[in-house]
Image (tube, rainbow, N blue to C red; front, side, top):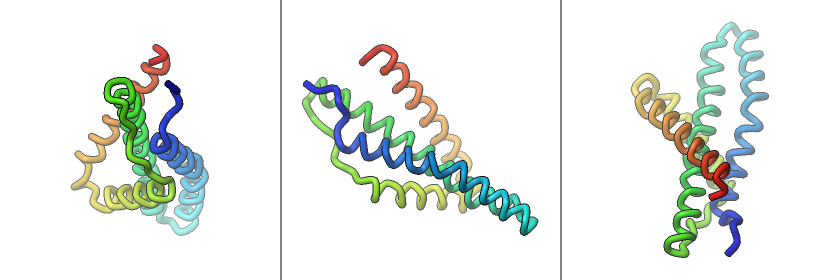
Length: 132
C-alpha cells in the first residue's frame, strides 16, 4: 500500500503553497499602497487579513484531509473526495474576505480557526516525525 497522499490532499497542499507564496509579496504591495495613500491600516486589513485567513483555512483543510487520508486508508481503505486547486483557492480567499469583512464580530471564529490550524499543523508534524 502506497504512503503517497491522495489527490485531494495534494490539491489542498498545492493550493496552500500557492496562497502562502503570494501572501508576503502582496502584503508588501499593500503596505506600499497604504503608505502612499496614508491608509495603511485599511490596505493591511483587506489584503493582508484576507490572505492570512486564506492560509489559515487551507492549513486546516490540508491537515484535516491528510489526517482523514491516513486514518481512512489504514482503517477502512477509503480516500478523501477529490478537490481541485482552482476550487480551493477562490473559496479560501472568499471565506477569508468574509471573515475579515465581519471583524470584530467574526473574531471568535478567526481565533478558533487559528487554534485549529496550529493544532492540526502540530499533529501533522508529529505524525511525520513518528513516520505514521
